[in-house]
Image 1 (tube, one colour):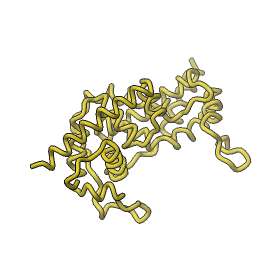
Image 2: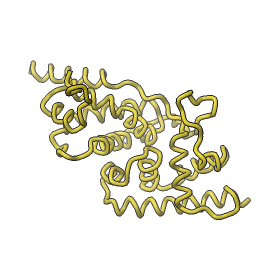
Image 3: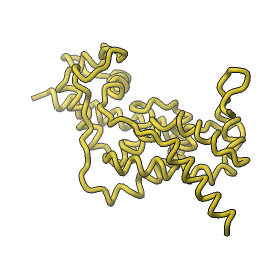
Length: 191
Length: 48
């Protein structure tokens, strides 16, 4: 086994180094670690489960062959998510049926899932649907930065790396997107 | 959301909370598909 040393899981950078040297098993561990966020990223872009799965898998294969460009000290997650999002964007135009962005119903929550936060509860179901609609209406650059930063909970630095933009651009784009969402939400509650 | 105007910080908190409520499709397992493909491609490359 190459994914543990003295009982502790190997760090991403160690697994990436082993994978770059040809250890496919070590790379499988990285795939397992990031398959969920990779799939969710691809799904948020394509909004189609089958295409998202294909895009994420293809991205992991491409990332393996690109490991020579992965720098020591760099975070693996945003690096691979950039490849995933490029793959998903390339496939998006061919997607037929697009699945809707929806919130989970209370009865769909598992016993281990947290109850809605105060912020979510304060919005209520209609408010959350309005917010989802407002996110859908953002321009693509703004939607992507909101998606990475808040829906997928990447840090600002990771968001910048994943989108290949400067941290300052992440901040300004987020600020603009949040203002638009705020105006849309206020508009939706005025009437 | 009440009568007071929201701030950007409140909207950010609401979007973050919303992200935890999204109904994502279940993420499929990919490890064996990816590693099998890489091993097959390596074997094909070795036999060329």
